[in-house]
Length: 86
Image 1 (cartoon, rainbow, N blue to C red):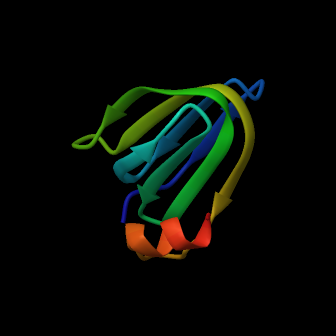
Image 2: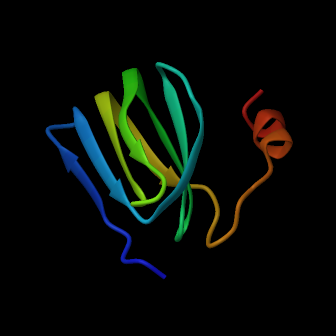
């Protein structure tokens, strides 16, 4: 397991390591699959600036309101998440 870090700078830039995948994102929500669980980031004007799957790093820019782990060490299927956030 790679070392997982989460760095937020001035609530406008977030750097994440140990990223497995960034599957779903919009300007208000980004879902990142990390080695420590699924991470849901909410905010406004969000963009995924850099996502390097081989390196396992992601960078998210915009106004960050929250970052919440919604599962631990496992991936929650997309259909479950869409029912949860309706």
